[in-house]
Image 1 (cartoon, rainbow, N blue to C red):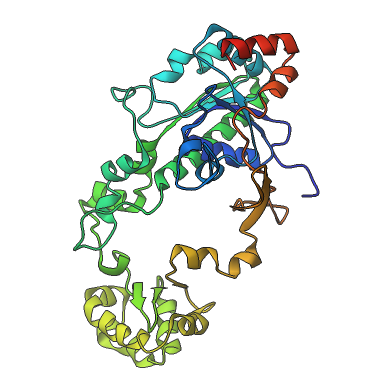
Image 2: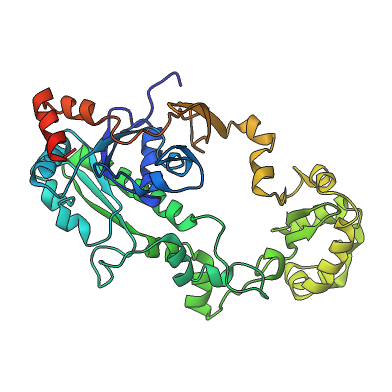
Length: 397
């Protein structure tokens, strides 16, 4: 990029591991912040050891998914010396992040109350499974549990199948993003007022919040949204997957004009005048009859034909496998696949950030090796070579 990134000059310390927290701080790093990842000496983020694909032993591709554009500092926060180093670093930082179990930030000393003397303007962001202020604070928790408890699984999959989770850890990603939003909002205020604060977000609250309109329907009308055949929209028809001659296509006639466009583009304009399908409510009431008619139409041609016929005229998409999705030539047009240099791979392919600044994708660099920046970060904080060597001998870093 030609200009400075929006968060250039901001320093974020993050005691983070695995998915949700690192995903959120990666956004901050890609937007220009200096993100210093705090990892346990000798062990590091548990994500480094997640297989099946590795760059070297305990340096996984999984880890790279969430840790681009960061520095790595090994530091034992359970020791007095480690806490003293944290306080010195906090004095020159803008935020401290963690995604530890809810009861641990207070014990380790990562809250605003613990760090405000080092820096009154510091923002302390906490991402946990269930929050820090209730009876589940000590509970460990992961994405899949939230999908189960928040009703995601009960709403996902075919009605004839068991409740089904998302294919991805979507709650982790949403929660990491919400953490970043909350942190940035508090950071804006801290820059104005000089006063920092704690910001909290948790996986289950995020998952519940994302139930959105089905939640509104249930809370106000007692309507329980159930699973539908072929992932059909619960109240709009046709808005679902249809088999084609060689795969499947997803059609979304969400508003009346798209229904008319659909009937014209598939060569069945008379359907728009069929009494069974005149209004949106009619089409939903007679969903089975309409789907049977459309099935017969879409089965006559391959997916590519229907994308060409309908694309740009109404909402339509091919139903791709993961490899088809990532090999889609359209990603070259949009620049959503990038490559970075890693010590173990000259050209490591990564995903670009979806945010553009001044029309350009954000720059990427490979996630750091464990402790790669420890000596440099400590030297920047004013520690001399003898002090750093002593920390290493004691296992503090």
